[in-house]
Length: 160
Image (cartoon, rainbow, N blue to C red; front, side, top):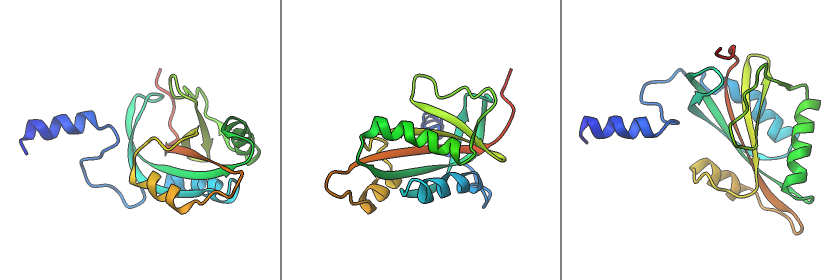
């Protein structure tokens, strides 16, 4: 593959890291994955990721948690309860959070990690992780499947 084609592919794929990664890149997802599994009873997958963080203006080594769960009250109601439970579990809003623009995402902090959480109704990422968590989750009659994506990274000050 020509070098210019490879560079173009990397420039257009913000969640692909071209270089070697540290073995602890997923450390920022530990608390988020634990919350999703234990408090939300979701099936969750953790992967390394590189995040273009609009809050800091930096490209950060981090991770993503892709999760699937079920609800009997509808996805919109579940999203409200999700953020209430997150707060009750002592996650706090990141100072100057700058949530995902034009999206239903909220940024929360747990100790040294910031995570942007997004609750959504239908699988739409098209990733292997999303396929795996949905395949592992079998909704019972009367339950509706919903998804959560959390992008987690080191907690840093916002850019001016």
